[in-house]
Length: 63
Image 1 (tube, rainbow, N blue to C red):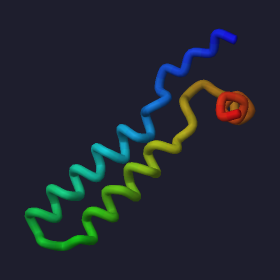
Image 2 (image 1 turned 45 degrees about the vertical axis):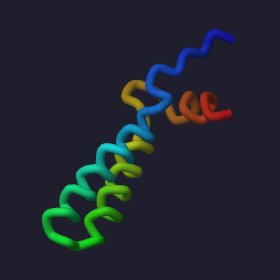
Image 3 (image 1 turned 60 degrees about the horizontal axis):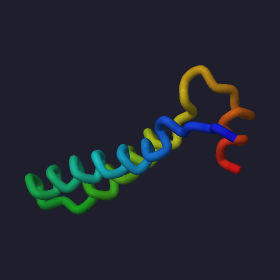
Image 4 (image 1 turned 120 degrees about the vertical axis):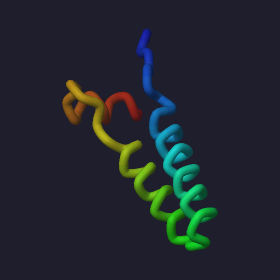
């Protein structure tokens, strides 16, 4: 049981970074839609399957 999760917080990082970009765009344009766009893009980037892993390997790590 020595499973090491090297990128276990990767999804959260992408959501945070893209939300920050959305907030910066909101501050520049005063359009709140940019915050939602940033969150959506971050979530989409965070759920990508890691390269080199089969679908079954990803499912086994999640439970």
